[in-house]
Amino acid sequence: MNTALIGLDWGTSNCRAFRIARDGAVLETRAGAKGILAVEGGDFTGAFRAMLGDWLAAHDAPVLMSGMIGSRQGWVEAPYVELPAGAAQIAAALAPVPFAGRAVRIVPGLAGDGLAGGRDVMRGEETQIAGALDALRGGSGVLCLPGTHSKWVEVDAGNIVRFATFMTGEVYGVLRQHSILGRLMEGDAQDEGAFAAGLARGRNDGGLLHQLFAVRTEGLFGMTAPAALPSFLSGLLIGHEVRAAREAFRAAQVTLIGAPALTRRYAVALGEARIESTVVAGDDAAAKGLWRFADSAGYFSAMRGGTDLRPQLKPG
Amino acid sequence: MNTALIGLDWGTSNCRAFRIARDGAVLETRAGAKGILAVEGGDFTGAFRAMLGDWLAAHDAPVLMSGMIGSRQGWVEAPYVELPAGAAQIAAALAPVPFAGRAVRIVPGLAGDGLAGGRDVMRGEETQIAGALDALRGGSGVLCLPGTHSKWVEVDAGNIVRFATFMTGEVYGVLRQHSILGRLMEGDAQDEGAFAAGLARGRNDGGLLHQLFAVRTEGLFGMTAPAALPSFLSGLLIGHEVRAAREAFRAAQVTLIGAPALTRRYAVALGEARIESTVVAGDDAAAKGLWRFADSAGYFSAMRGGTDLRPQLKPG
Image (cartoon, rainbow over all chains, first blue to last red; front, side, top):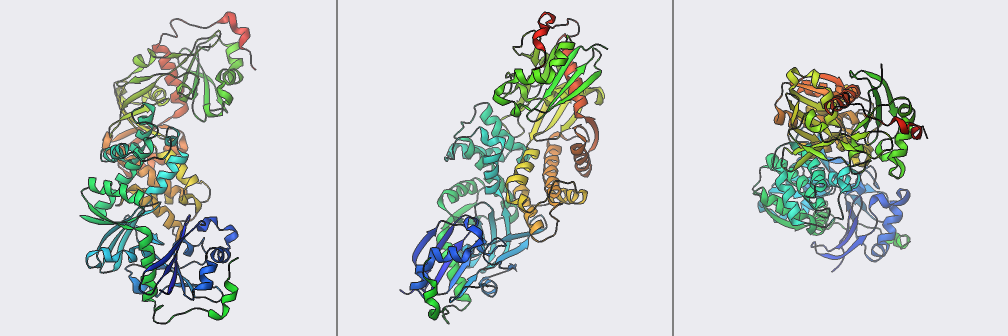
């Protein structure tokens, strides 16, 4: 089948590219080594050509990208679209990237109100959500995208109407690497028992700032082994996220989008909180979401590209 | 007046030494540059002599130390005393330090149950608490010692019966220095308005892991200035600590022990939570607590020391 779209999910520390057919089938996937923070001197044009020059030369298809590539630290800053937002609103706000001989655009982020006031934002997840809509009955439901900045999202008939970010993954990372809690830990292997113990501890009194210190005393008194402490901390934090999100989103069933290592942990935490879950793979969702936005933007009824300039687009 | 006790409050990143008279009066205070983490090669004997050799030569008085100097990373590991504990229990568990020609001992830490289960510990704060007892009616009340690891403590007739640690200060530090939240911040100046806004935000829905992300969007959308964001984060975290501690300790009045910059912030947060507060200076409390434990241990009824060996104790 012909390539109708070149899609990229280009985040802070990872990049994935997809060759996508007109019907949404993913023909080829390529994992790039360079997240946007690893692109030297902000030379995104060079990094893009180095990664996909052969695809650009071989396939006369437009390019659509999502993720932090559209942030202030990315290639071109794409605006935030205000909630509620569905594929139509998002497709209408694609940000053009100056690039010789090819239509290259970036999916905008979304902005909405925070649960506690102030604002909340996402960038990249809107695309995975659009790609997971078929997993929701009637295109409605609550989704959870665990990660550095976990997102909980309410979708109504295909429109994102509300979402909330939880800094769970990043708080885990900085405590693991830079706090006194990390000093007693060894490795990052998953320990199901310690994860469950952390989940259980988090249901008790004292609040998160108190309960975190127990990670130290667990190690100090040898109650939890150094190799199991990271999972205990992870359980404590994910448990707090799930309880706060359950309070805000009140869903009996949640669709998890992400990589297996993380969605497995969240499925356990959701189960403990009496929330059923189904899982959609993150990469598949990103590719499908990019295709959906491209379709909404009319890419497949009026193909774009710059075949005349193709010789400029060779690798290197 | 004669020096009856040389007291040290020797923590992770600071050291303070006090020459103390028999009646508890502080005759001289000296601030040392080296916290225990700055003592090279674990040569605490050398660091101690370099800091206080002249005092040791001039004053034939025993030495009592409190703080992280008694931790596994310190000079000698002093045991934890189990709650409930007053001056008598603590004085009975002073840990001797091998040191030629002088009685040198370290105050033990305390251990108790955490609010959420597991264990909790303190080391150093027990001494400040003992020194602040006169500020409590009948030696009973609730104290708060804000810091890297804030402690909330319930004292009954001079005995510490319950306490809880909150990692507020350390979580602030790692997020300020190592997380995405710090990237939009400038400096560490205090901004009362932003601190109050952080306190207020923390009272709303979503939980701490969600509310933390608002520190980023406040900066991203220019709603809070870069120089004010650290205070917003501080207000958010201290507000969470105070609410969780109020729930656990249910006190209408709290005695704050610490340095003015921090106790001022906590007094504001306590006021917002409708808790009255009085303040005791941390250094004064440490010196008085060391004196109280020395008195309980009988130091002033039977003076100890090693005058014969004094020549060994010269500086350097």
